[in-house]
Length: 531
Image (cartoon, rainbow, N blue to C red; front, side):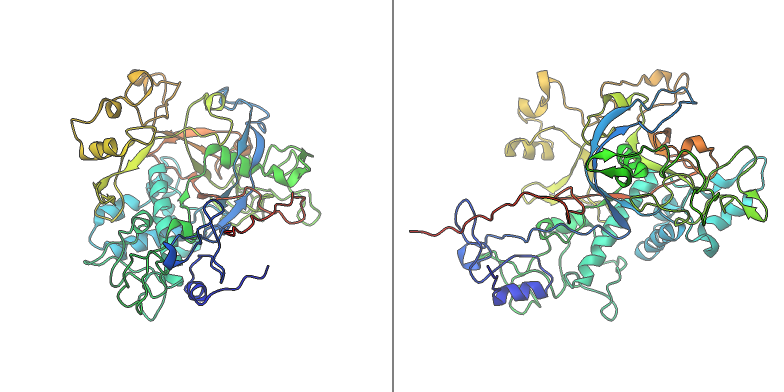
């Protein structure tokens, strides 16, 4: 059936909106009520979409694999990578490690947005002192590695797990802000360019959560191409030529889901890239590195003998012999060095280790769920400044304030309002939400593995601040290039051997490339006709 678009739908398409509309309005399959019709209640149906990944990301089709299965030895005798079959959902991952230039972009935005907030800038600076060694002359890297243009495409190091989290949140907001400005949904600055505007005394920077909650609106913010508001009670917006408009909603499919660190299981799955060795669910050949084979040198005729990653070949050998360097690097190498793996990801072994999202426990492999395994859940809720209006409380940078979650289920409205107001007369159910009347704890990280804090620093260095990093670095031996190997460091510490890359959730169907594969045919629902 050929779809005929109405004039209203053409206006929406021209404005970049993703509402689906036709001359004969689509109907609800369950009530028969037409969608996208302002005269009939303004019920909205959005066009179903499988959105493209955010900038810098490539799709990783998920599936089942053996977590820890690529390990061929345990030279550290930690017994911390027990084999277990799990399923990883499809997701997106950075093609490369985050580079120095990417971090300088972040620092520059802070200087133009908050020029007088020296604490914010200082907290965002990587710890370049990680290059110092008592018995080696690494001092030049302290000043040069982050800022000199010769190193701009090298992976950023000296970044703590906490700083990586802040960068992910910043990157989410800047990417979404730029998308909305390109589409004219947010107002642009300076000759119509879609560059992100710095904060001024009259406005705070764009924040995705605040925008989606309707708390980022007004003159100088609302663009000319905002979607039409089909709510029959909506009033015309100023400068919208008599048109009632609204901000973009999550349902429009325009806003990206948000950058984050990959989980340990996602990282290991993406590093192995067994999809390149799979046909009809049969894995033809396993791997112990992100490439095929048991060695670390290229078997191809034109590149035969070249080292496939940046690592330490042996004690005192970080680069090879002058005149023919074995891995073309002494410290780190540019983020697009060496062949990518079968998912198209660069440097998933060597160059720098990479932070992942998980909290470290030696026995995590035995205890996490077998679907989307992850250890590190600390559940939080956005604080409401005005519960009756649903407005979020925000900090001085315009970001939502998060509080530890008080319940593991949706509370009745009256109890939720009482909690938000701190009402001492809240009901017994709000006080005792968990099984057997035990208070609910939002911190699930130590579940079934209690840490004895009195022994911390005496017999163990593992606590809830211990975060996993993986992949091996320019200063590690080949053993650490195996994706199953895992180490940990305090979330506030940094190293010249540790960087990171970001990931993003994939929404919708997990199949990345359905073309050429068999599928069952599905009929569309029949339109309802009243007798």
